[in-house]
Length: 282
Length: 305
View (spheres, rainbow over the protein chains, first blue to last red):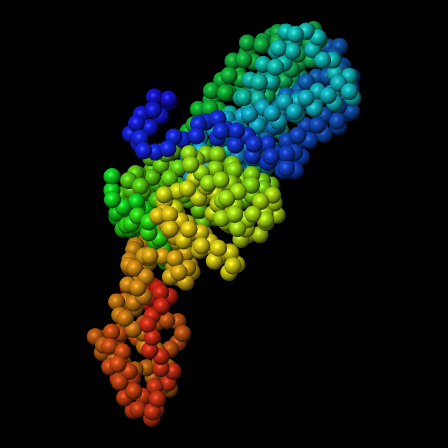
């Protein structure tokens, strides 16, 4: 990449040097954050929805999960934290990209010399910041209202962080690719919400994963949300809970494999489907 | 490298079996303001979008600043300013935030405050785009398009939706760039805009350049210098030899003739009127055509072709 740029610079020696990726990325991050803070729709949709679900279902569910001595409320809370991360990383991201596509922002960036990567880096950082805020908020409410036990060891905190980072990255890259399926901004929420809702139901958020039909578990395990909820169950639930997980183990390697595969697949699909111009880019 | 900053040869853009652009030729010289005129659907926007690299072409050659826009090189982008036809919606960002966001991408941009002043939005600098009028948003759009001090500027209907005062300000902006030798392509529906700003203009119809010239060359009617207008008498219209005067439909219901021999035409009309008992030719006007007359004559000839 650097060699390529140097080559171009040599051919066009009279051209002033282009600003690097850093100022462009900083400019992107600034407007990303301003847009997020000032857009009530994105706040309501991506941040408050998981919080509301936690408040409602956290108050509804009670009693131990069949075959364990763990309160289902704790299982649900581990799941809804994963769903919260997916909400900002997948739903929040796709909706913001589609709105920018429709409102002429992507077209104008494409007409400027902005390095294309600045847009993606800005989005990823924005997703990271909002996801961390979202998860911190959910954790805070879970600890204060629903007596969630925070991880006791540094190792468990470590697992929490890498599951969160890999899961967020997987949902983000899947989200970029998913934009190709959304025809316009009006339908963005309608096209993004169903797969997210379905995944929540079959990935062990609203219903204990091991009690779902086997085929449903198999389908869910292909997508990023199920491994994320399993990772968070490992982090927040007593180790004895693994007795009801598939094969009686937490299978952390399996989580890494699935999420990394999604990062690679999502990046590949984004590279071939993301459009800087064309009929949908107004 | 080609001499001229903008050179388009035999440009074609096909959608299905429809040629939106159908063999367009266009050359714009350095420092020139070139107005691209034509009815809706004539292919103006498609042609401009190909020239700025937001659309691919089916065939033909396009060279902007000596480069194929399809290459999409960053250093090339830095020299080409684009104001697309649809106004952007920057939602909850302020004017200042939008402008400094875009200037950050260029090697030699305008100072954001200077740029905001240039488009007349200083008073709105801290206002969010969502709270601004359509005209103000359009001016913000113009600021975004020229943020990098372009060498070539494409303005696709930049003044649509502006009030008369804001339109004049936009015109001053085009003149500002012209003084700095910026090559500008301007598509517009407003012929007075083309007359006020353009050195040369081209009229596009059905995807092809029908007439190109300086503004004085274009203010002819299908090649004729003078327009003679009169009213029909009892629904009867004068019939003059084609080599003397060419009739065309200017959509007024009156008789409109293009000619290089206005004196002879008027004599013919006088005898035509006299035969019908009129000493005066009713509603007689002899005038130099405006660009609008040229445009309407050309477009009406296109339709009857």
